[in-house]
Amino acid sequence: MAAKPPLLRADPEYLKAFSTIMARIERALGAKRATLPVTACVAGGAALHFYTGVRVSKDIDAKLMARVLLDPSDLQVAYRDVDGHARLLYFDTQYNDSFALLHQNAYDDAVPIALEGVDARRLAVKLLTPLDLAVSKLSRFSAQDQSDIRALARERLIDAAQLRRRAEEALPDYVGNLDRIKKSIDIACRVVKAEAGKKDDPTI
Image (cartoon, rainbow, N blue to C red; front, side, top):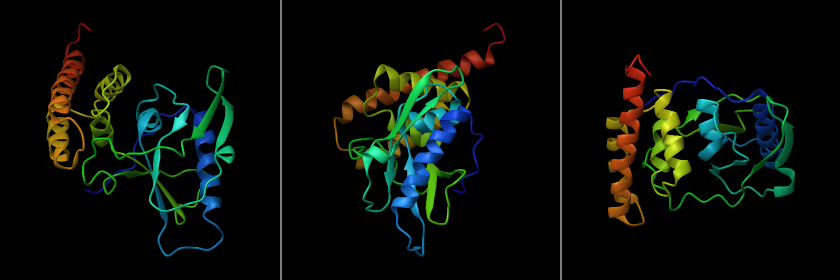
C-alpha cells in the first residue's frame, strides 16, 4: 500500500537532534553514491513521538537495511526540550527486532519522512506505520507498551479490528510464546476500543 507522509508532532528540538543523528549515519555511508538508498526504519518510542508528540524517547530504535560501520559515540546529541530541560538522544546500535512481533510487510509499508540535512537519495528514513508500531509493542507488552498503544488509539491512528488483523497475520513468523501473545492481542484490542469509546463520548 502507498504510504502517505505523516503529520509529524515531534518536539522541534527533538526533531533537530534526530535529524543530526541521521545526517551522521548518512555520512558514515561514505562518499560513494549507491544505486539505491540505504533505508533506516524507525520503531519504538522515537516513532511514537513523531506520530503523537508524547513520550520523548532518549534512544532511537531503528533497523538499518545495510551493514554500516557506526561509531556510537558520534550518534548522540544533547538538546533542550520545549520546557527547557536538558536531554540526550542517542542511536541504539544494539537494537534487534528479531523477537518483536512484526508483520512481514512492515518494512515495505513504512512511511518515509523528510529530514533537514539528510539526503533521501542516500539514506531513506522511514517510520513503521502506526499500525505496525502497535503490533511491534505486543511481544513485550509492558505497561509502557500498553500506554504507547493507548496513545496511538487516542490520536485515532489505529483501530481494534485493524490491529487484530495485522497482529494475527504476523503470528506465523513469530518466535515466542503464542498463547501469551494472543492474550496480549486481546488486551490491546480492548485498550484500543476503550480509547475509541472515550472519543465518541462527548461527556469525557
